[in-house]
Image (cartoon, rainbow, N blue to C red; front, top):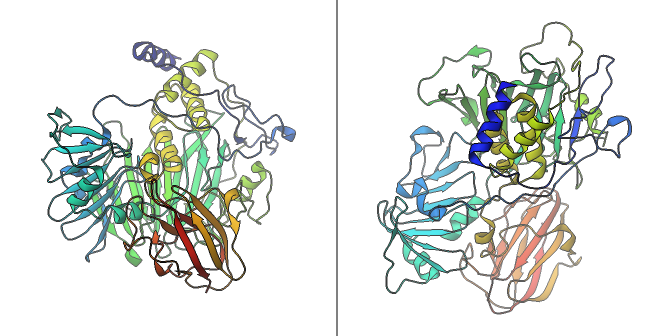
Length: 585
């Protein structure tokens, strides 16, 4: 194909090497002329050889591929929001003291206060600024910039406290101060509530599933699925105010793969439908195209944001709820929709994006809640007439696909290089991207895979920086102990040590922890390297702030279910004694 030849020439010019291990299997289905289900059998994503009749099994968390470190100044130096907030080109909810902002990229959000603000980037970057103009910025690489004002020099540190030097706001290395402040002193002098900034980063609505390309889905728990089925499917149901339905149609001029041609987002009172050409309708009424960002208020405080098409004809739509949940859809008339969701868990929510109530492991369940093989589970989620938000289809679905997708070996090699050279972290996502690019010769698919993979894989706080904040993240489930029936806790935490306990809540309410051995810290939330505790739900999402090991602290009210209580000490801190009780509601 001519497009593949162009790709090969680009690859030769850039000299990008192949990155990461070879492709891994994922789940792949498509409707055959006889109504059966088969694997795609492509060179890039082979069907699982251990499954019967070509049906594949789940892949929950394939090997990650670390991206190559970028050249240039530390990433924190050039964070745009260090120069001041730019909320004009984004959705804003609320008119009180604190407003929520959602940008055109999934995972890009901010809290806007009275002169102060907190920004969170899709790469895990953070910016916190005071009303006086001083700021602290954390780059996706974990480096930290401290500045006294928008145009002032940035004093830059590694997350371990090493001073890296002084930089201008355009990234130029400057003469360093003769006696730079310590990392801790620089953070304290900024006046920024860094503990609150880090806390807020990890209390956001979690990734709740998404889809891109010839459809490649990632569930909320990280299961990778590919399907060439056509028709309308429930991606998220069982949650009346956060409903998502997808329509898959054959890709233009192809008989082997489908794409996402439309999506419906139900907010309870309203229904928003966006198609691959970027046309948006609300409750069946088509919205006019926009030449600049436009925001529309819906019922219940929900907001619809629309960004105009860029030079490549790609437009973006976002729906945002008052609690910060969001759906971001990127539309490309030829390549279909990319959809990324960040929604708080709700009992009973289920669909192609996974079941909130699924046990550990694969979360794609059939509509009846059974752990059916993936092809059957997908087909069970076809939209019924009673629940349909999308326009009703006309006529019966034709047999599809009518042939198996096949990729030229040379195109496959180039596609692997193109996709692997863009920093995708997950090997399965590299393979999915390479499948789309190799099959079609269109590198436009890369952007969607990057956005979806980043949303599913990226930590809320860069890992190196997160290590300085005890109890910030959940512990490995296998490391958790059973909490004593009487709730009594008696142990000593060595420096950098973490203890985790299974916590079952039988009656809704708050969990209290009383430490009778004295205060480890008085700050709330605890500061950097300060001992802390936190409660996480079964999916690993934080349901409390980081709380100090001091006196009597309480979580917010929790619903019935299984949780994990994490207690951790800071790096290079003295050992901490915990002698107290965990009090269930």
